Image (cartoon, rainbow, N blue to C red; front, side, top):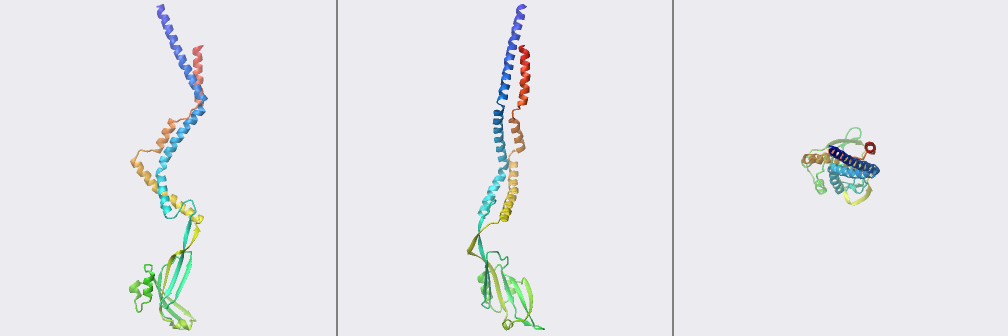
Length: 276
């Protein structure tokens, strides 16, 4: 009986010593965690930020892809978003000629913003009160070449409506004080065409407003195209950005030194009570 009690006491003492060793190890571990908490948090946050960055890149991949494609398309067109381009501005030439042998040119680097036209001017007719009138018919000849207009303007006794269709405007012009030359001038036809002279150009830098508008267009065009690719990806994969971020935050949680100190204090109190 006495031997049994002795054995029980030795067993309890052995268990106590094991527990004390375990508690001491826990205390030392907590002390190390507190001591190196800044270094641990630096390591944890570095890994977490790398993983979050990878997920962010994965999230924006469709938009980055479309941005690259659009940048290539813009580059082919000679347009660079976010940067003012230097571009060639070609000379615009207006050529006016009639069937009386008169030819007139105008040349500028701005657009004329006008269409190619063919006009028929009737002969001036005398009216009451020293006034004269004539009819001016205008036809749209955008589809006609210079050679075709030269051939047309030199023809006689032709029906313009049969060749050019209905006129886009018919104007009755009235004026007085005509010169003798104008009064005797017969009906005539006149063509006015516009073209670019690719051999004559200047280098002009894009304006700030032009670049801003092009950049805004580039950004706005990227959004719907990127959204289409993002939707396709959502149908083909299980990628969920919010879920990934939540999992990373849970897995790489920073060391809370305040909580560790509280645990250390409890462990020390328990250890000291068992030792005393």
